[in-house]
Amino acid sequence: MTKTIPENKARQGRWGWHTLIVLVVGLLLALIVWGGVEFYGEKLTNDTPAANTAPGG
Image (tube, rainbow, N blue to C red; front, side):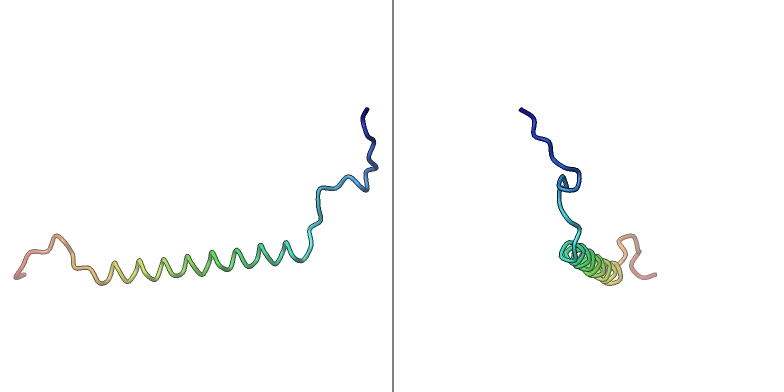
């Protein structure tokens, strides 16, 4: 037997403030990590000597 559910009760979930906060915090954490990786990558690039330079000029 099939159950009939009214349209206003057949929702999967609500989009509330908790969901928005979790999404925004996750985005901010991702940006912080991305910035850290960019900074670390720049440090590695600037600190390593070039491999194809001839000694003495």
